[in-house]
Image (tube, rainbow, N blue to C red; front, top):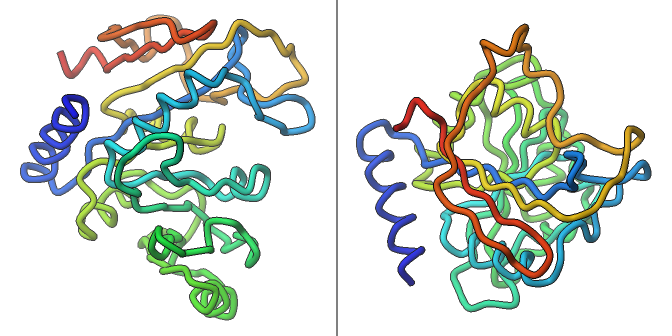
Length: 238
């Protein structure tokens, strides 16, 4: 309950002053920074205790956001399970409207219609098909990929979202971190190694030197089973 109140306060304050939601990026990774194996499988990197804590984290946010690749690869429900809590709005970032019509998140029973964020040049037939399958399609002004996170967050804020939990995948993490659009990063680190052929959590951030590295300070850390839960915020917010 305390965590929920804290999240509500942060989200409310940012939304009331900027119109944008409070953004938490959650990354589950191995020791060597991988979020999936060479086949694209991410089930399961972290243990049960950590995954249960993630469901509590979901319940403390207004929305959960993933990229379409995560939907295609993992077919997630993006719901709160294993703990009591409200069901956040489910959001998919999908520039080409490639969300499968049979995706689990299009089952709206008890969870409301998922939102699919796409660009102004999106295919009209695909848009109609996804809306018929139960989705609400939101349009950002961008006409090319990748979309600007400022526009993504603006459309969420205009639709009443005060806090959003970004859960992946790599392209989404890379884009939001490159633009420094995250208010907080939560990294779940499992004591595992996958090696070079596996999928990294973050790609090219267009950082040319160590002096230009994005810097964060650790605000909280704990052990959950064999995994580590680390929370960080950008130094600029200190």
